[in-house]
Image 1 (cartoon, rainbow, N blue to C red):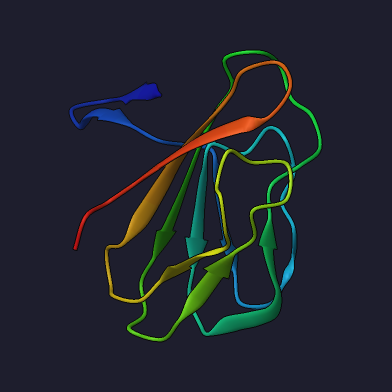
Image 2: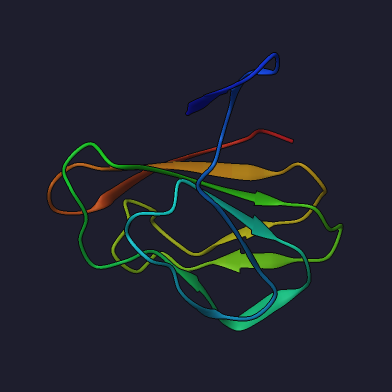
Length: 101
Protein backbone atom coordinates (compact mmCIF):
# COMPACT_ATOMS: atom_id res chain seq x y z
CA UNK A 1 0.00 0.00 0.00
CA UNK A 2 1.10 3.52 -0.72
CA UNK A 3 -0.44 6.78 0.34
CA UNK A 4 -1.69 8.84 -2.58
CA UNK A 5 -1.89 12.60 -2.16
CA UNK A 6 -5.48 13.33 -1.20
CA UNK A 7 -6.54 9.82 -2.17
CA UNK A 8 -5.92 7.84 0.99
CA UNK A 9 -4.12 4.53 0.47
CA UNK A 10 -4.02 2.51 -2.73
CA UNK A 11 -2.37 -0.63 -4.11
CA UNK A 12 0.52 0.02 -6.49
CA UNK A 13 1.54 -3.59 -7.12
CA UNK A 14 -0.96 -4.77 -9.74
CA UNK A 15 -0.75 -6.91 -12.85
CA UNK A 16 -3.42 -8.15 -15.26
CA UNK A 17 -3.50 -11.58 -16.88
CA UNK A 18 -5.61 -13.04 -19.68
CA UNK A 19 -3.84 -16.36 -20.28
CA UNK A 20 -2.57 -19.35 -18.31
CA UNK A 21 0.82 -19.08 -16.62
CA UNK A 22 2.80 -18.93 -13.39
CA UNK A 23 2.52 -15.76 -11.33
CA UNK A 24 5.57 -13.96 -9.96
CA UNK A 25 6.26 -14.00 -6.24
CA UNK A 26 6.18 -10.25 -5.60
CA UNK A 27 3.08 -8.72 -7.24
CA UNK A 28 0.36 -8.16 -4.63
CA UNK A 29 -2.77 -8.02 -6.83
CA UNK A 30 -3.36 -10.07 -9.97
CA UNK A 31 -6.50 -9.24 -11.96
CA UNK A 32 -7.76 -11.87 -14.42
CA UNK A 33 -9.51 -10.14 -17.32
CA UNK A 34 -10.55 -13.09 -19.52
CA UNK A 35 -11.29 -16.82 -19.49
CA UNK A 36 -8.27 -18.74 -18.20
CA UNK A 37 -8.49 -22.51 -18.47
CA UNK A 38 -6.08 -25.25 -19.48
CA UNK A 39 -2.91 -24.79 -17.43
CA UNK A 40 -4.68 -22.12 -15.37
CA UNK A 41 -3.07 -19.60 -13.07
CA UNK A 42 -0.27 -21.19 -11.04
CA UNK A 43 1.05 -19.71 -7.81
CA UNK A 44 4.86 -19.40 -7.65
CA UNK A 45 6.93 -22.20 -6.06
CA UNK A 46 8.31 -19.88 -3.35
CA UNK A 47 8.10 -16.41 -1.86
CA UNK A 48 9.07 -14.54 1.29
CA UNK A 49 7.29 -16.04 4.30
CA UNK A 50 4.14 -14.03 4.94
CA UNK A 51 3.89 -12.76 1.36
CA UNK A 52 0.30 -12.02 0.32
CA UNK A 53 -1.17 -12.35 -3.17
CA UNK A 54 -4.73 -11.52 -4.13
CA UNK A 55 -6.15 -12.95 -7.35
CA UNK A 56 -9.35 -11.26 -8.52
CA UNK A 57 -11.46 -11.62 -11.65
CA UNK A 58 -13.18 -8.86 -13.62
CA UNK A 59 -14.97 -11.29 -15.92
CA UNK A 60 -17.95 -13.63 -15.60
CA UNK A 61 -15.94 -16.23 -17.54
CA UNK A 62 -14.21 -19.09 -15.71
CA UNK A 63 -10.73 -18.42 -14.33
CA UNK A 64 -8.88 -21.54 -13.17
CA UNK A 65 -6.50 -21.33 -10.19
CA UNK A 66 -4.37 -24.48 -10.03
CA UNK A 67 -3.72 -26.21 -6.71
CA UNK A 68 0.02 -26.43 -7.53
CA UNK A 69 2.13 -25.03 -4.64
CA UNK A 70 -1.08 -24.35 -2.70
CA UNK A 71 -3.19 -25.66 0.17
CA UNK A 72 -6.12 -26.31 -2.18
CA UNK A 73 -7.35 -29.92 -2.28
CA UNK A 74 -8.31 -29.39 -5.93
CA UNK A 75 -8.13 -26.66 -8.56
CA UNK A 76 -10.35 -23.64 -7.86
CA UNK A 77 -12.51 -21.96 -10.50
CA UNK A 78 -13.45 -18.30 -10.05
CA UNK A 79 -16.71 -17.81 -11.96
CA UNK A 80 -18.04 -14.28 -11.36
CA UNK A 81 -16.82 -10.69 -11.49
CA UNK A 82 -15.29 -9.84 -8.14
CA UNK A 83 -14.51 -13.45 -7.15
CA UNK A 84 -11.11 -13.61 -5.49
CA UNK A 85 -8.59 -15.79 -3.73
CA UNK A 86 -6.37 -14.42 -0.98
CA UNK A 87 -3.11 -16.36 -0.75
CA UNK A 88 -0.44 -16.25 1.97
CA UNK A 89 2.94 -18.02 1.66
CA UNK A 90 3.66 -19.92 4.90
CA UNK A 91 7.22 -20.88 4.00
CA UNK A 92 6.35 -24.09 2.17
CA UNK A 93 3.06 -23.51 0.31
CA UNK A 94 0.37 -20.91 -0.39
CA UNK A 95 -2.54 -20.97 2.07
CA UNK A 96 -5.56 -20.04 -0.05
CA UNK A 97 -8.79 -18.46 1.15
CA UNK A 98 -11.53 -17.63 -1.31
CA UNK A 99 -14.68 -15.58 -1.52
CA UNK A 100 -17.95 -17.36 -0.97
CA UNK A 101 -20.46 -16.89 -3.69
